[in-house]
Image (cartoon, rainbow, N blue to C red; front, top):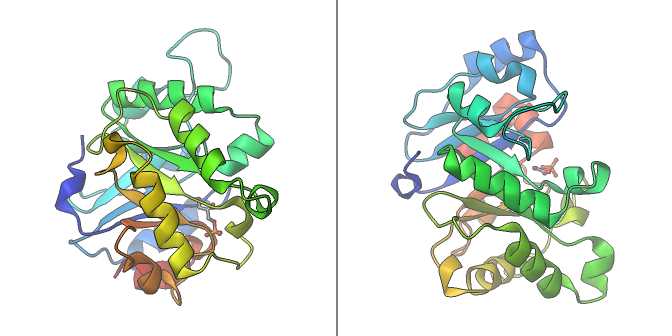
Length: 239
Ligand code: 13P
């Protein structure tokens, strides 16, 4: 399992449903990783085997995994198959999976547990919708997502948490820096168990705001969607 304690920050590119072979080739020709940080590229699953890694500061991640370990589940990809292909990280419970594929906290819990068994680090995504925020439900929603979605086997060395407010994803909107720091602190204090967890921020991170967000004392890195598709911009974010 990757030793997360080695890195000053963790940056994850979530390409979502984007990319093709020539995009990938061009991307890795231009990508400049910083050896102090951990950089993880999460591609669509068909490209996972073409992703590059140096096992020092550059790794590969999947965007999802099956809840099932094996059997008659057409179209699925198991945690052991990811391990068999040297995938070290996997996003779990991204809000788009919760929204469009009806993923529940229970699914997130099972997937994360299966990944940990295979020495793959789950990046467990949590976050509130705008409606929940406006109704002052952020703390309650995050607490439930954490309590029900994070398996008992998870610890600060084998799992990551990503806080992505749903209303900040792909919108250009972000919480204020104070809000981000406060929510990250809250997450780390829901239970003593989470005190040392690394918590990444995601939602409209760009080269123009990544430094100030990542410099916040309770933020341990960023999960980047749209801006990670532009390699020149991503290079600035991870530099
Ligand atoms: P954007 O960076 O495009 O807002 O997406 C964030 C995200 O969903 C990363 O997982």
